[in-house]
Length: 260
Image (cartoon, rainbow, N blue to C red; front, side, top):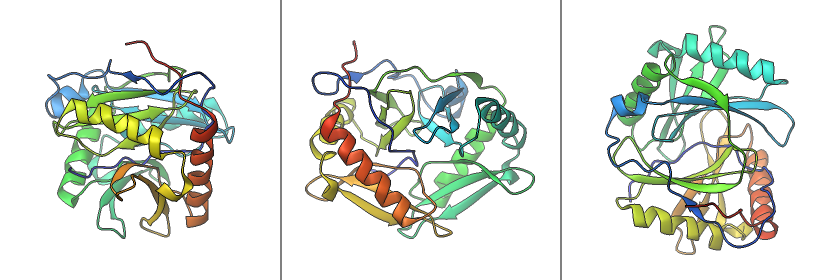
């Protein structure tokens, strides 16, 4: 399985409901192939985090998360942040590619004052991260704006690399977990069941070091295989606290059913 992990925010409370998580396959589009299709229907989505701050993320046309914002004190601040991304993100020299301590790569999008305004997922090589920079730079100006749809759910989609992925959304619409790549759609769907089975155990979450003192965590299966990953946090303690919160969340709050 090719590792391509998303840097995502975890720790929001999912809405209570009955049953195990169903899978929304509405994002699956087997025709998606490369940068052109990634630009198609790209969109910014805003939401409110459990800390009360406003955030946005940027999704490619296939539903893949490509950039996640920092927190803002207000919805208006998040909207201003989107405009900052649209301006600065069009220039590839606004992106800083970094290497995590486990040898993977990700990038930050920087404003003119060098403040971080967005962070990417993790990539297995620097060249992959650079290709992702080129893709994001091409779609930021064309992306539409909107609010993230509410309702906790899994979604499966075909990535820009041709592999299948799933991500998990919280009740506020935030993408809180994204998988590694699978060669078959059926395997990605099966991966959602693995999150349900393994995500309730705190021991399944492993803290990893990113760059510049930041950290993130991965959710693993019993055999140690990575199922999904979080965003980066400013400290290992922050990553650990969020991992604990996610485990507790999945223990007590099943993900709502989603109509196929």
